Every structure is written in C-alpha cells, then in structure tokens.
Image 1 (cartoon, rainbow, N blue to C red):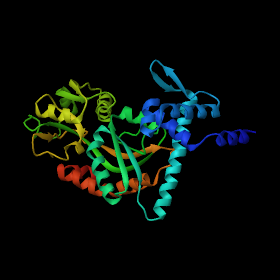
Image 2: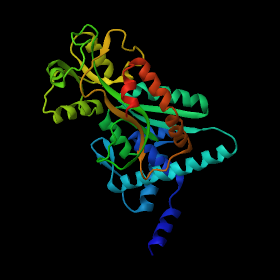
Image 3: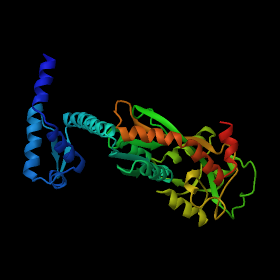
Image 4: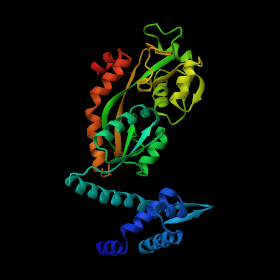
Length: 326
C-alpha cells in the first residue's frame, strides 16, 4: 500500500516542478525565482501549487512579507536537493564518459580557510577548465547552517562539527594556529613564553562563531586562564591590521600570513602550547551523494598536502619540528 502511495506521488511530480520549487527556496521569493528562471510569476506560482497539491499539504507559509518553508516543505527541500543532485551527477557522468569536462563545484569555506581555498580552486580550475566554480566564505556557525541546508557541494573547515551535524571528513592539510605580535613587541625574541604571560597581554579576538576563537578559548579554559580581551574583530585582516597598529596580540592560522610572511611587521611568538596543530578538512553531509567534480576536488586536495605543508614551513621554519613529530 505504501509503495503504491509513493508511486502515485512520483507520477504527479515533475523534475521541472522541483527545480522551480528549489528556485523559490533559494531566492526566498516567487518574483525573484521567476526572474532567475525567465518565467512569469504566475507560472512559478502555478507549478508550486501543483506540487503542493500532489503532495497534499502546503509547502510554504507567509510570515509578514516573507515566505517560509513548512515542515513538509523543509523535508521536500532536502529530498529535492538529493534528487536533482543525483540527476546532475548522472549528466556529468555521461559527459565524462564522452571525454567532456563540465559541471559545477560550490564550496562553503570558513573565514580562515579563505587563504587556502582560492589557491586550491584556482589550480583545480586549470586542470578542469569546464567546471564552474563558486565559493561562499563565512564563519563556522554559518557554515554549519549551510551544511544542514545542503547549500554547497563541499565545506572547508578546521573544527569538524561532530555534535551539530553528521558529516564525512577528508583531511587534506595542516592548519597550525600561532600567536602573532607586532615585530617590535618586547616578547618577539623570547623563548618558551608562558601562556599565563600571554593571557595578560592586550588580546584581539575573533567574533563569536569563529573556530579560531573557540580553539584559543578552549585552551584557556583548560588552563583556568582568562584572556585580557581588548577588542573583538570580525575578520583576520582586521586583526592583522590591529596587531601592526599596536592594539594587541592575537592567535591566527599561519595560513593567514601566506602573502606577507613573518619577516615584516608581524612575528610569530614562541609560546608554550603553540602552535595548536589543527587540520583542514573537506566536509560534507554523510547522506549526501557527491558529484564527480566534488569527488575529484577531494582527491586533488588530498594530493596537495605535502606542497601546502612545505609552503607553510617556508613561512615559519620552526613548523617543521611539529609537523615531522606529529
């Protein structure tokens, strides 16, 4: 009986209806969805209504001027992403067998990973010029929300969200967190600086939701220390400018110094417990079926581990002590 009900439901739903439904979800507007699809608003409304009628319950609800998914609408959204993704994957598989290289790859990237993800995407794009690339950079909390909504193909993260959502992880590079100070700071040439002494210094901290912030706060909680937080800033670039300006010291990924290095106005301090040797992972929901471009990007990124590590050691030679011993 249940199989018959599912069969009847599928016979009354078309992929075009699912595409239109997903456009409304993504655009959060019937009007904008119509513009994106080059359809009239009435056509979009009719197709969404037919889809809701086939399922038997409303898919959207009106909240003021905004539309929101109903509970069933959210379930349909997750299912539609899987179905449409599988169809796209089949299309790319056929193209691949024909010797073509085309498709899409969309990355969700935590803020600190913006120093490594664009380089990987650029090199990958040279290998597969037919793949359309996209990247969304935001903090860790928002990336977790994007994972739950299946917004992207893959996610670059340093702190895996094991409790928040069920994911599959692929390690591809080290992500050492180091203590940074202006090169004129009194502690720049000191050895084995205690964490207690660092905690007394004016400290620049990332905003709540940052993985880097969580890492340093966790270390301080383990040592029963409280940071002397002078300022919270919303980006690594703002923190680096604050360090150069003498506002305080901070903890950032060594990747954030790839362009300028540590021979200029910012130096790495030799602090006990540092570097915090975190890792970069490519993450995706466990139940998600990966597209061919996503599968190949994982393989490509994992193969780049040695090159990435050597470049970081070139910025800060002492890193090799920790990488070799890990």
